[in-house]
Image (cartoon, rainbow, N blue to C red; front, side, top):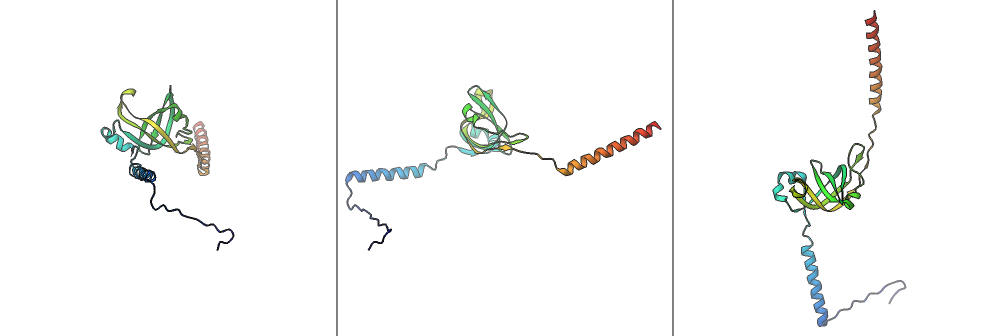
Length: 182
């Protein structure tokens, strides 16, 4: 007996599915297995600057994933731009499109913390396009955490100490000047 507000569900089971349905299910199974097996293949290898700098031959002309903070200036050069990415140890130059570089909100420097980004691209130990410099040509840039302004408040104890020391300096200078005149 069905009560008010209660839903009923029916499951349809086909004992002998038609041939076309069997083919569709086989294709669907194949696609699921294919996606499951090959979706785990990583686009590129995540590396640190230490790995890139200590083994440049290993990574030369290969796709890498490099993460870090944008620091310094974003230098626009025609349709492209240079970014410097610091991973906490070293900095590596990134050659990116102008559009990707425009998405950078903050570059790290005094007064601001840079955007944390992930760069996917081709690593060059000696890039022929850029005079033999070590760089990464970005294919994709993903911003994970946007940077922002950083305030550097002065400690009130330091202000008090400075005022006291300036007062002592004035008193000692006056005493020295008066003593010299006598």
